[in-house]
Length: 241
Image 1 (spheres, rainbow, N blue to C red):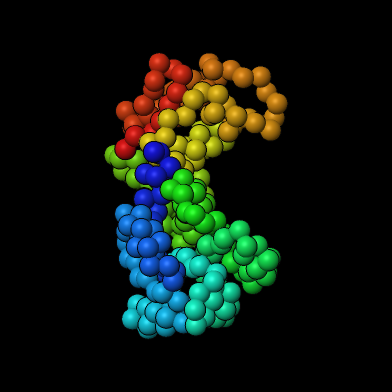
Image 2 (cartoon, rainbow, N blue to C red):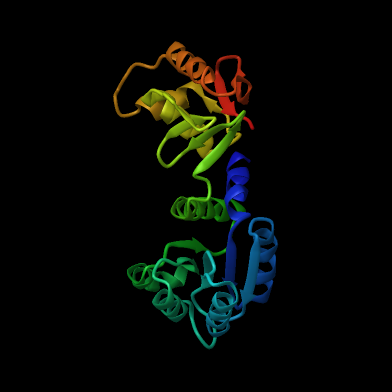
């Protein structure tokens, strides 16, 4: 559930072009996409998809954030669609829908610059997982969520790992910076003390210490509004704004 919340936080600002010739799949998938994206347009083949892509740019001065396209379609398939779109915008995020018998095309698509793949039949968990990865990368590129307002004029800059209060920089230890990055990266997710420890020290082979995590959390609470870090009996923590 936390991943869906985090995903919606990103996708509510993004636009999507969905290209699929199968009417039933197009309509059922659109119901899911409608709950995620700010703006969606659909096309039944690649030719129409490219036309909508160009019209959107002409009307808005920017391209769709994400393209989802089937491979096999009439008039223009997903391979040709990807080529034409990437000629216009080499940084375009494109997710290709593929069936088992489409595997021969995947290497070509990867070489052309396609971002990710989803295999049919589409499962809800698969959609959320792929979207989360692609949209998180896109959000970082667009810096959609570089700044997080923690309340009381306290702001976290995730790109530079800087905490400021009333525009003055607050000194943080490396552990505190990494912990705050973890919390703000997946808002409302409850992290166990072990997950936090592994995030901070996973590569250092340190011995797990619940007390150490508690101490770091307490020190961080002294520098941000204390009540936004929710403590579950000292066994897990989450940031709740």
